[in-house]
Image 1: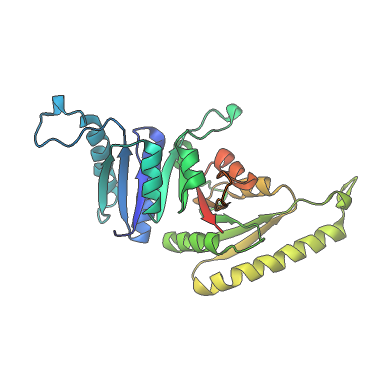
Image 2: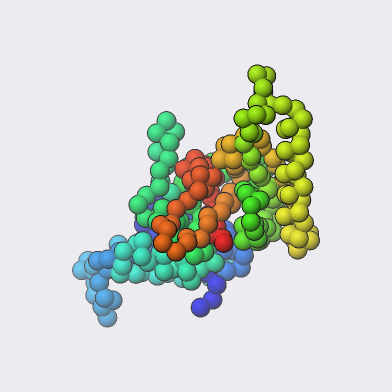
Length: 289
């Protein structure tokens, strides 16, 4: 099967925003876009039936309308459709294993009520073997802020390998022709806190240590992608807060998820949780060792 970007469609404004983002990404990467709609009650395809008695009519209409819009926006993009008679969660997990990335819409509430993921999105994000991107209709409509030019932001832990995250982030930045910002947050230990803030010498030492680790991690990727403008950001506070703030106005925020270990249920770490629940830009969750 040719490399594809798969987007899940359910007819909501969020899934349509996800489809538009996915079309941009597929076009930039020169990949095929697959529009997937899953519903357990889809009937076997009949030879010829009129629309008024076709049980699959609305499902076909949903993907057809999206395909028409996206091909008008991206005339050179190859768009294929897929109707699957299965539970959406199962269908998307299977599709994710076959795709370069899977893109899903995320439903948001009013700001005072924060933001939650649907019962389909979260299991796919937590279990998929390949990157999953979550797109909010609200963030898609607003686009990058004028204060922060569009860029890809990648959150790095610096414990263990960052290669999977950096590979995905640099590839995306290169395909879109935008800068990349690598961020790392580190909470200050209790003994470094003083009544007026943080001990200057300890803060300076921590910043220098993180800067050296970031430089080492980024060095081979700067060489591999010499045309990508790269910057780094260090915050001496909650890593989750640092990452969410850095993602403001980004075209994509990339966070990692540890591959599930034997006997343990899949889950997201605190930084990934904060990003998918509070980030207003598209968020890519990349599984890694």
